[in-house]
Amino acid sequence: MALFGWFSKENKETLDKGLEKTKESFFGKLTRSLVGKSRVDDEVLDELEEILISSDVGVNTTLKIIDRINERVSRDKYVGTDELNKVLKEEIAALLSESDNEGPSEYNIPEHNGNPHVIMVVGVNGVGKTTSIGKLANQFKKAGKKVVLGAADTFRAAAVDQLIIWSERVGVPIVQQGMGADPASVAFDALSSAKAQGADVVIIDTAGRLHNKVNLMNELSKIKRVMEKVIPDAPHEILLVLDGSTGQNAFEQAKQFALATSLTGLIITKLDGTAKGGVVIGISDQMSIPVRFIGVGEGIEDLQVFHKEEFVASIFGE
Image (cartoon, rainbow, N blue to C red; front, side, top):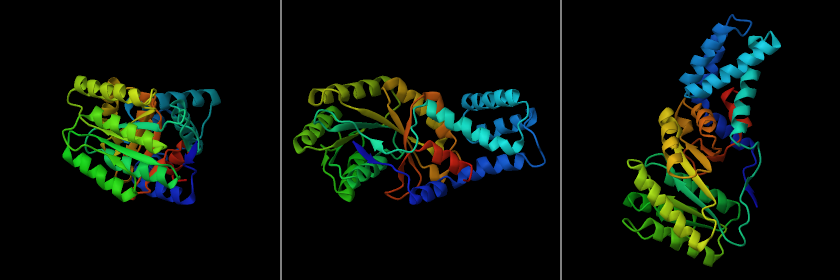
């Protein structure tokens, strides 16, 4: 069931603008470091390593990229600095591909025997989780799909209230029982309601507590068990929302959530306000979890389906 995601000129302009700080930090430093140098040698690779780490690509992923470039330099005997951008782009794109990041295509949801597609969204407070759910609901609705939201982040009153505001703004129904309600009960009602209405997609918001992994794991497992009573294979996707501007802290959160539940994809937000866009590459590589969406602006349309080629091109100023 194809939905949305074909890359338009407007998408590209928004992406370029959103990644401007990352491009200046990464590509700008790279360009300056190569002034007066004609070939890729150990000194150039040392500088590249420093640039990648300072762009929050992460140490392990950086070393992997450097090793791959080193191999190519050894194999080809001579790689000029003018070729370095091309080689670097290819290796970064290859890493993203290995994490199952598809090339430019529409975002698809499969058929589920007439049942709605169920997406459970996890993430700590403050990363833009509820906002991302609202923007995602807007994308689905624009694609002509019937969407139901479930407010199962009942730990904070603000989370429920915020999701209600988004449901009204986007014009989609919401199932909520207020603060303090049992999250699994809300999820059960949301799926039952969506099924009865013949909805195409259900998006369930969940609590963002990480202070106790055991409690988080138990809560998410309970929500999943209860949802399976309504739709046997639900949830079909578990998306983790991370704040890209926190750099390596986002990576630590990803590791913690991966221990607590089976993540199927990432939403990385707030990339427009940071020079740490390299974190997308590092998290995708180290976690082997595909990036599904990225947030590159404040507007309701600024949550984009992630396209690795366009992302890498924007970082390199193309």
